[in-house]
Length: 304
Ligand code: GLU
Image 1 (cartoon, protein in one colour):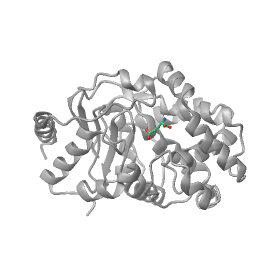
Image 2 (image 1 turned 45 degrees about the vertical axis):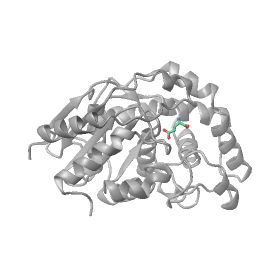
Image 3 (image 1 turned 120 degrees about the horizontal axis):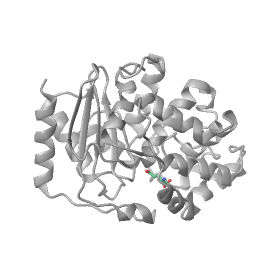
């Protein structure tokens, strides 16, 4: 399969459509990026890397980091699921408070902010230096050392974290938060502020396409049944309240972030990362979603 020509063709087709969206501006620092950037990187299960456009430029991974913290939680604390975080799509915006009240402070899934805050809380309880543990985990699955935190994005998120603090406080009132709210918000915003390129992200996502193995380093990161569950969560909950639409159009497990990145996998074949900062009204990258739709249509493959 000539993946290089394919992604170049897709990149070109999307570029000439002139699609526009909005930069995330509720985290002010994210509204300062050049909106015209657009990169695609595909990594096949043999470890061949194909890239086009801005695929080596770093961007804010934001909620894509929730896949990595979920993966850490899966390796060490499976009993958190259902007891403290559920595994159902929410059908609500990522930072919504409403379901939490009806469902006794148990978030619907680990990819909405409330669920990711519970996972971060559990990681804080487990590791003496949670920032370092998360950072090192991501470096190890991507087999990349250069994955910086953007301190300006981190500060910007911290300064505009009222909604996330509200979610954490609300869950604490139901007894579903152990650590201090300040500490949880610090660690959560830290992992959202990490920066990766499409190439690094596609390398990290390869474990979800390759039964828990990375071909870039020797480690076997997770067993196949955990990978199955993480992929199921990505498919059903990975795109905010647009997860159904993404499954319909693209048909791959994946996760997006408000930095405009999307990571996705076709198990047994490849992982792919697309980045373009302008978002649709649901918070997903406009060009990223279109690129993945065209790519899976052209390939004639998906999970289905
Ligand atoms: N740090 C962002 C927030 O909590 C992540 C949002 C996202 O990418 O979905 O609002």
